[in-house]
Amino acid sequence: MKPVQVFHVSPSLPKELNALMELAYNLRWCWDHNTIDLFRRLDRDLWEEVNQNPVKLLGTIKQERLAEVASDESILNHMERVLEGYHEYLEDRTWFSTLKDENPDLQAAYFSAEFGLTECMPVYSGGLGILAGDHLKSASDLGVPLIGVGLLYQEGYFTQYLNPDGWQQERYIDNDFFIMPVKQVSGADGKPTMIQVEYPEGVCNAAVWKVALGRIPLYLLDTNIPENRPEHRCITAQLYGGDLDMRIRQEILLGMGGVRALFALGHRPNVFHMNEGHSAFLALERIRMYMEKYGLGFAEARSVVRASNVFTTHTPVPAGIDVFPPDMMDRYFGGFCKNLGITRERFLALGRKNPDDKAEGFCMAVLAIRLAAFINGVSRLHAEVSRKMWRDIWPALPVEEVPITHVTNGIHSQAWTSKEMTDLLNRYLGPKCLKEPDNAALWQRMDVMPADELWRTHERRRERLVAHARKKLQEQLEARGAPPAEVEQAVEVLNPEALTIGFARRFASYKRGTLLF
Image (tube, rainbow, N blue to C red; front, side, top):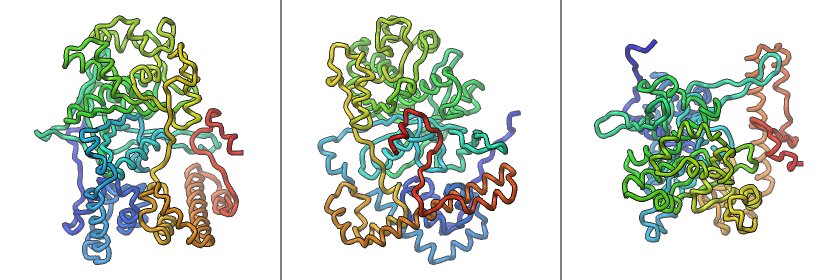
């Protein structure tokens, strides 16, 4: 049944607290402890209950509490300090600004199937998304002109729980985008910005949402809108959900729809980065656009597009890479390859290690490799593995000359350092130590930090982690109807003084967990 009318209710903040909404809708708060402390002060219990989501917090908190806060000078002063730091962050001179004369027109688009930004934005699964999120956060700190492009999943990736018999089960959470730190993009006429992609059964519309991440915009596409037919509305339902047919639909939307969204919003990136092969169809869409706009042939357009594409491969085994059967590619791209003016076999050869093998499927990683000028693995060892995996694409080259290089993955240090540890580092090394993690002179001051104080801080963090694990275990036991005695025993599990190694999500063999031992 369709609703007669949909209402979106916004919180009524006292004018003294209007700045809280501005802070809530920029995810810089998720790596700034002062901002997190500010939101926590509004209602400590509710902050945890809403999964540390400031937008939901402001929409859920009692009006009486807001009135109290509006007259609390201590909190108001805290808010002013946070707001001042936020504006200074946005306006400060950055690392990239010192290089701007050398790269005046650089704008890079970063495509990824998932972005791990913060817990209240569950549009990620694991390492690939966390890396993508850290890339955007680091780009914001450095001032790199980066634009993120992804999908806004209605249910995201599943969370795990145990049923009464102890079996692992999956639970999907229905995301309400209107109480998350994300805003729908609208045009000058006030109407939502829409893009379209074509599927065999017809045109699919996608709304565009924007996440502000410090200085970086992240655009996410959403097909769960009334304008779409049911089979299209579910395309952005789940991350890595469904069958191969759903996967190819998502990847068409991400790659081809993502390019169209950027151009619809007025962006003209001159570098397109494919974070894993999920977004590789972006290269085909860019070729089509160059052919249409400039009257180029396929070979010419391919050369132009390839020069500005970058591909990062993450997966060290073929089994983890999407491969679509030829008949599926015919169904989705039969008309498209005619638009490119090339034969079916020439089109399918773009995604085959052996272009002459007509039985070989269409591999997204191969497509990205063939249409990118720069290809990298995510560590020196991974690059070696990747050169061996894909050497057949360059049969005339010795494996050591296969053009796959590497970067060494890192993290966004501010987002991964606790408040307690941050305070300790700031006290002895100064506030720049996490903002300039490559400044060796700062880290040489570690000698002045008392070892016992560092160890006590580490122990406190371990104790808090164990306390958190115990609390979560108790909640799970209660939810599955465990006996009271078993629930009570949960407060004794784990020892904060023992080395404990745990695994989250899944423990696939290719993750090489035995290396830990």
